[in-house]
Amino acid sequence: MSKQMPGPTPMSTRAEAADELLPGDELLAPLPLGAMLLFGLNNWVLKATYGNWITGKLSDVTACFFLPLLLSTVIGALGSKRTLVQRVRIGAVVTAVVMALVKTSATASSVLDSALALTLPTGLESTNIVDPTDLYALPFCALAIAHASQFERRRRPEVDT
Image (cartoon, rainbow, N blue to C red; front, side, top):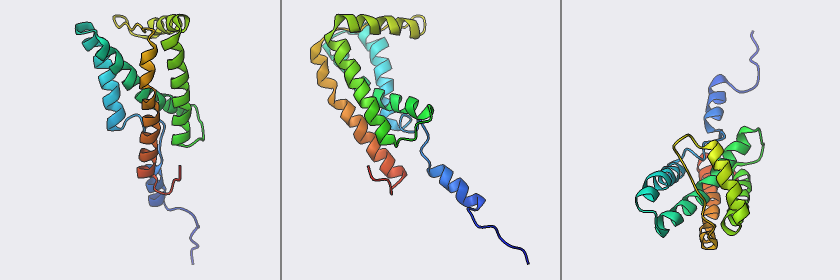
């Protein structure tokens, strides 16, 4: 008589893996992908063509939405055991602090511009404008948290955020 070993079967292991949230899943949902696409289109096409206050505000709004999710992805990829919502909350705080600095301080804005010049591919430029009215975009950081909460709830109904 053969004994069966207790534990998960290969099928349940695969099902559990399919339910597991991986770093970056939150960023690859339609809403964040749309925000990143709109950010790129706005910064490197629309601003060059129109360059008005609308294109400036659009960059701020889209960045405040997708940057917390991007930072969450980085935090998760570094091995953090925090939940998705916890990682996005951290990303939202970091985004809000950096946004407040670069939108109110010429020195912080210059540091950001220098960092972007080093990291963006040749031919792509991005210049920050110090404008405290851009801080009206900060509530979109909270929308990123709400998105993460909904995303996590849909993927793992038992998670309580």
